[in-house]
Length: 565
Image (cartoon, rainbow, N blue to C red; front, side):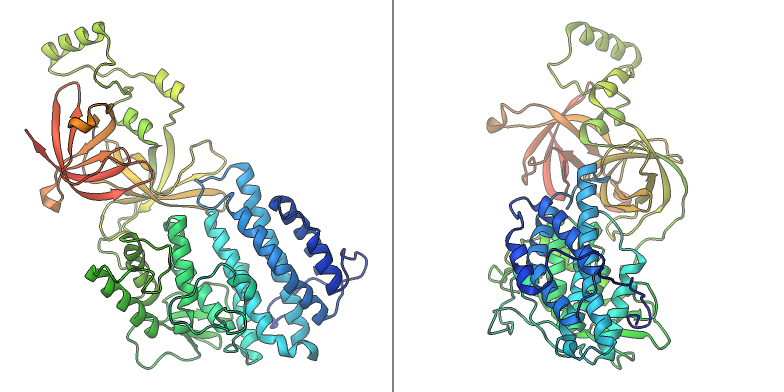
């Protein structure tokens, strides 16, 4: 029998038996796993699950072994996720292999629970008491697989959502969507917010199939690929903690203080804010979630020292002000109908020259000149520069392509997909794409880049806001920094800064029409309010007093500034 008449599972047989045929033998096999070598243990678990899933077995016996295997599986999955989580894209071969194996193991574990669900729907009475457990486990595996795909820079494919909708439909048919169950293996590293009701026997918060389905919907709506790995963990914990505040309804909510997420259980698309119709239409009522999020945003905005993220149930590892910024960021994605663009999107297409990394950016923005701070220029070069300044009013530009080759700088060609105004604070952005098979550098969130769209003459500074692998392409969202950058050498001044060396930096001009002050792009760790920074070019040495931090990237800081005498 097919699962929910939507998913056909492959047949089983007895031609290949696993290394264990009953629960005791399974426990004995688990004790022999080489858990000190997570990669090897992951491979052995994957091999045995594949054999187990193809073996004809009673539903209750299969479920017992799957439950026993959950603990070692979750351990090795967590250990091996460190190999690809948050890494620049495209992944290196070893990182990609770890991601592929992790996804394959989640898929095999899911198939095991789907076999149990198929047996249950086929009339296996021994599994009826475990109906909620089976549905919740399958949905939890899908949520964790989704999270690991995001960590590896990949998109969840259509089968994931088809499985999720089919499992939830089955839970509805079995009338177990709201039955709470203890999910001990998954909860091992889960911290409870203060005041939560927990399972008194195990110390864990019980969850229902509906809550786990909501959790998956929330993490899918949060645009996790635009967040740093640590922030992703915060959002995934919030989705789990607050999933009980979202009801899954068969009809639109009567009073809508927030917009509900909508889904078609008979389709294969993730939940969104577009209304659905038909027998499979469901509405995720986010009204209570909105109240909870808004309350925390208000308390965080007050700046009360006693109102810490931990005291508000946001997590012990959440830090200010980033925690509030992330919460504010996902608020519209969960309860307000998605991100409303403040600026119009202007479709574009064409090629774009692109370079990443501070040193490479400085080299190309300066006109292919290698970085020569004061004191590094020879006497002959100084004499030549003085003569050129006297005759032409500027130093002649000389391309130094050998520097590009020696340093490994690479000016890449990408395709502009569209103007990208996803971030409210900026009208300028680009979505770029290039084939993965084309040689190019690796990109990480927060990295400084320079881009030169075909329609513009100058190279502009930008920061990588998100990266994602889509099919055979690498896609990146770039937020541009306003103004034409001036490359400089920069250092701190003052008694304590005497030993400082000049490092590559940039000056971005004031833009009165957009009410934007001048700013400096600095090396990481340079910012301190009212600190005096010295910039040097072959033309002049200038001093700037820093104002407020504008943004912190992975390899730079940008701060507002005013020039001082």
